[in-house]
Length: 279
Image (cartoon, rainbow, N blue to C red):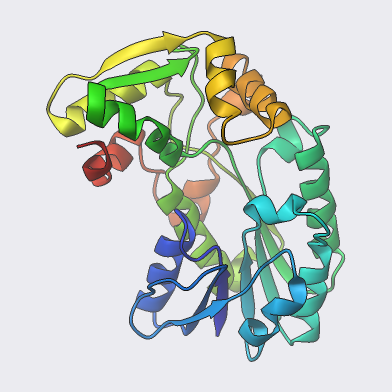
């Protein structure tokens, strides 16, 4: 039995599907009741309350741990999730971390995630750690404006990073959960090429078969929009990366191909598969 947290998200959904298709028994965990593939058991749990995971972890051999906002929830103790897993007999944990623990290690989010990485490595469990960069699915932020106005509005239009398709992250996670060869693996996950927001808009237009205009926001305009959904500190941090990526953030990693035996999918592939969101 493999437990997948964040099972309704951009990574958890394809991961649950991939494991099921590979013949694995899966428990899908999310905060609220959700539809899951046939044969998958859903368990509601709040990762900010590690004890709530006990029913999901019962009988499990492996855990995919995706924390998202639970890392910083009031009173949260993510390290306790590792303890709960070990106490429940889980043998392997695959942790979704972030490339930022290497490229920008001093922000509060990365400090907390790096501490969790260290807890896992010292736990005595089998482990693998995934460190993705930016996600292709962040382009869904533009879906409403594309549908309504055929416009992508973003800052730093000609500054790019090698964003990764969440489906590739899911496939790497599946491999790490079931294949002993990846025990102790630290994988940096990126897409196959650096791509700018302006180029992403062009790829969305090609998928739609209709024009999409790119409108470049100032940093202040972008921050004002972002702080409607995230703390100002995180918005500034994200804008620093998008506007001035470091050499490490521009590097195209070979790790997806090392694990999967194929190159990561380009953004145009993601856009074609998700074009319905922009219609």
